[in-house]
Image 1 (cartoon, rainbow, N blue to C red):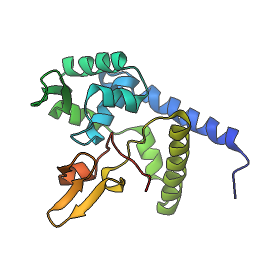
Image 2: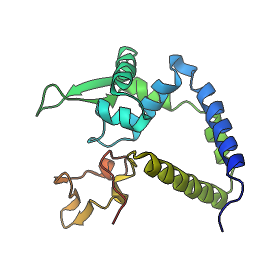
Image 3: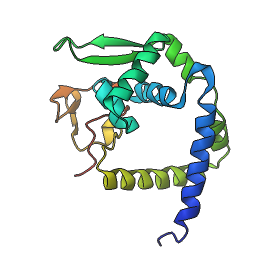
Image 4: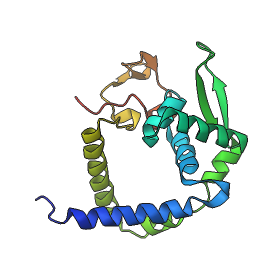
Length: 183
């Protein structure tokens, strides 16, 4: 049965987002910097370029680059030039960046009060809303690698059929820029 009260749901999501963003100003960060840092912590090794951060945050590449430079100046991330193309950069969190993200946040504590079945139902509903909105706007899904149609299990372990590379355990449980849920 389809919902009859989308405006209320939208209002609740908006309010939660605003409360969460207000809290994101802690640790000398702004909400965009915290979002970029959080994304990098969740992204696999193939999805940490400035363009990937821009796509995930739905912002321009210039804005994402400035955000990443700021995080690097603060010692929260380091840039790593590509071995194949020295003009191409990837980013990794420093120990300080990882510690910054370990700070307890109010929304996490509030979600933790939900019963397991409530949390699972909420997660599934929000994922459905997100997938629909991304599809409407033509944005990438950035799903978990192991749920992608290109993810293969082989005798030697996991492999990305799209990129033609073997996957590490930390890759398959992380966000991927190339994710495609279509069969």
